[in-house]
Length: 470
Image (cartoon, rainbow, N blue to C red; front, side, top):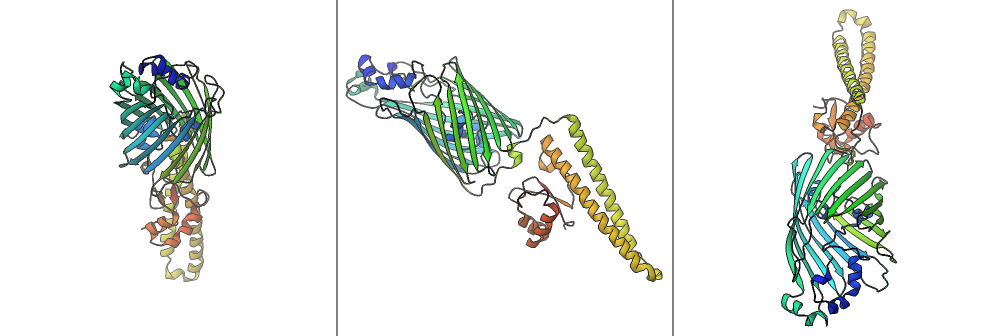
């Protein structure tokens, strides 16, 4: 927000903007130009802590490295009415629109526009071009190039002021942000973001520097829950943001909450809700000041987003798992997997021996041949059932181990009796791919139904096959 005293001559200008000065300084607390108010109702509901999560179109604002989290082209728009119900009827708000898209699996780009305004008095405009790229699988980096502009409205005071007659009503400049996003485990991510690195000057007469801000972020994800923390430092002032998000009904509805505290005693409490249908997301949040400005109904923000193309639901791998598993537990699972694998191999050999014996029955034993064949066939069926059970135990152990040790699915040991589910796979598409017969999905399901929820397979899951595929 603007420091009016750097724009005009004194008492006339201050008198004209007395209402705005009160709002700008929030009970005599000195705020800077282009104050970090956040964008998007989802992050707003989590207390504005989002730099280490940054996985939707608002990533441009919070951390451009988060563009590497984007899987589909998407657009988001938001509006925020700040401090609703002020006694002087002032209308203070901001708007946001963002378009982002992945270029490939490791690169994302975006463009956005942010507008902050006090109606009939003052506006700030921010135009952003953003780029993010994965340096390697766990580390991403991003950069923003921003065009900043702010201006006062013309009225009977400003249009006769020599300063505005000479300098005009607006000032523009450029700024740069950069961000890093590090995800050592699926459950944990860390962020480091620097905003307005070049500290642009937006003063009409005297210098009015937009200060550089630094932000450290942390996010913990476990299935349908997110926990986030941001620490921000600007001009010897600091703020800490805490937030949480919990999804329900197959990640369709969300409840959010957050708090903010800092050295300027501007403490806030936030709550929010969200709806996500896959291609469409709607969010609403309200932030209420616990100190500072008083006698208000709080700030209210709504946002609406659309994703284009086929949107795959977030898998459990993307939501993360707890990696802090004791070494003894990992070794136990590894032992179970190896023992199951050995049992599978032993049973395969036994089955092959019985099949050979079945084929070698001679005509001399014609009398006993039928009985022997029946006994061998029963043994083969019994051993096949035992082998399937052992194979399931091996697959379950290896899947569990795979999640704990955070390896890629390509590291999972598979053979012709198993199949690793790929993104976009369904039971029917797997049946067609492996057997060229859609109806075989039923037998695949029956063999794995204790491991498949609601008939939906997940990327990276290992399926037991009814028989070896060709």
